[in-house]
Length: 354
Image (cartoon, rainbow, N blue to C red):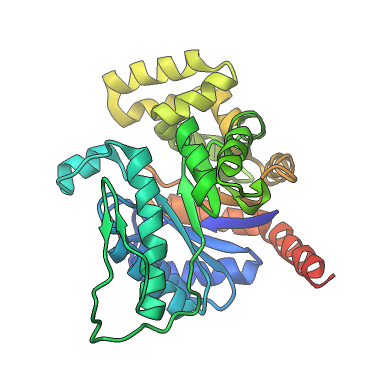
């Protein structure tokens, strides 16, 4: 199992992103991920690329529906170029409220749009590399290579970049099995992955005539660790609570019999706003995150071995968590899991040579 970490970047100077990525690489992590909350994840991963030599660079996630697929393909190709082929392109629809408020679009018809989006991403890379590609005349997107390209081709480290699709509903998970290189999600408990994600990935792969093992399972797991257990729990309550109110979070909580905790959290959020997340039910935190003292957290991580291919430890960052708290949480993740991540990379390298 590969182990990565998200770089705290909602607050604090963007200039520090590269330094954080370098620290993660030196600690032994397989990957570093950036996310899209105001700041552009492609810019964040560019900063990380310039400061590192080995780690995989993941967007977790970049919003698809606020960008044309050609623009997104070109941006991903930039990072792949700068990094020498280390880009891992995680995409999702984008936050519906942001799409409506800021991008003059919406998240309607996600299945059809994402299906065509993935097709156009790959056609875009083919066209950039060769100057030629097939055309696509879809319901949502069109791609027609110009008959004459005066600019010529673009040199690419790879003619295709791994695409990870964020999917929590059954049809989108099946689409992932049909077309994506990886599934990416959060609150990916072993029960949820084994009983929901894997069966739907396999169903989608079967429809496309693919081997399900071709689709990597990647999860961003909320991770809050500290020698002070209550401090770790306090940060995790805010992050887990923030995510748990989302419909996808409710789905996972329901699998674990925790609907009552989510219902109460939503009720409190409607009355109190984000202050309600400070009182997120600890049952949700214990079930849906890797939280506790370093020893407790290492034990919780071990349960994902053999279930998740690529586990990304997600640093708490949502309001009211401040930049200094996120930085401390990030440093604790590096200290707690760096040795395990390095050992996993060494084991993987030995297996690849065998």
